Image (cartoon, rainbow, N blue to C red; front, side, top):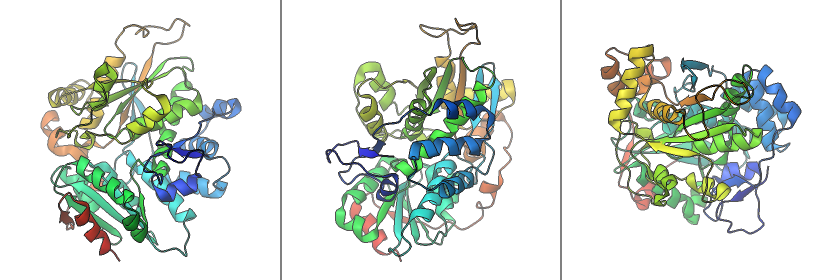
Amino acid sequence: MHLISTRGGSTGRSWTFREALFLGQAPDGGLFVPASVPPLPDEDRASLADLTFPERAFVVARHLMGREVPDDILHDAVHGALDFPVPLREIEPGIHMLELFHGPTHAFKDIGARFMACMMSALRDTNAPPLTILAATSGDTGGAVAHAFHNLPGIRVVILYPLGKVSSRQEAQFTTLGGNVIAVAVRGAFDDCQRLARQAFADPDLSARTRLTSANSINIGRLLPQTLYYVHAWAELARTAPDSALVFSVPSGNFGNLTAGLFARRALGMSLARFVAATNENSVVPDYLAGRGFRPRPSLPTISSAMDVGDPSNFRRIRHMFGEAPPFTGSSWTDRETRDCIRDLWQRRAIAIDPHTAVGLLGLRRALRPGPGLSAGPSARGGPGPRGVVLATAHPAKFAETVEPLIGQPIPVPPGIARVLDKPRRFVEIAPELGALGEVLAEIR
């Protein structure tokens, strides 16, 4: 795999997957993107429907990475990251929910973080000084990264999060581990955390002295494995209706999840697949798609807090790949609409969903309404009408304070959350300034 920078500051320069994995972002400050995403060979594509999810993931991961990563390492990474079920179930006529929340921290980010941890552990130079992973989180990234890298030799983890702006249960998942995991509460918003991480990586002395790398979706090593569950959903639905149109609705904040879906679309040649970016009131990208320009701004607090991003990093990747006409549509939704969606689905189907998934479901319902170029009935080729997939990104129990009043009953707490709730929380509180972060990093041993 040949990777280039979105900034193109190093003309003609490319990096290997291993180099990009440990660098985090390109030396010129850009983000790594594949120089090209060749389509999966027809014979491999045809075999996917009959394989298990880990087997599908291995076929696609090996195709994306070529022979750069030995098969045994790639096999262990895929099977280690995907050792839990990822069911696809129909929740409404023509609408399926891909449940990505059955991993150890009950969030979709478990898949990318665990894959990345396996890769770093297997490929790192064991004679080199320890790595410091610096990750900013608006909620679920913190728990997934902290759990994936907890107690791995030669790796330290620093989680930046906005003080008071993640759910209590999310906070518990990365402030109670200890060991090589350090939680840093920033007095500000997620955008401040993300800015601090960018500034730290851009500081050559600080970055080199602490051997910084990233586990956010800015790191291609965490982003690429997220393509795998799109392939899984496509393959599952292809079993029954290979020629039907498919619409993916992606709850979007920093836009890494959607970027991975667009990679998958290219790799599979999914010409029949459409994508919807569903956001909360932080509507920077939907506004851009509506012709109002790309104008980052301070994020607004919402009940879908992991999507409270006013300057999404991964949109740089999307614009680099597709220019000013990205191949997806967008919509944004208020907290009131999100609550109504949660309540409605529970009353009609007895299915509880978290606020982020609700935003995605709202976007999907709108996208599947009959309109120009999209019919709700049978396709012109005689097959079924378009089918939709909403990515369910987190277990509703992570947002019990929002969901339970809407459905009128408690949500059973899954093990990955229950075991940390009563543990003491440890974190360092800092101002949103690089100097304050530098002092924390200097104290790490």
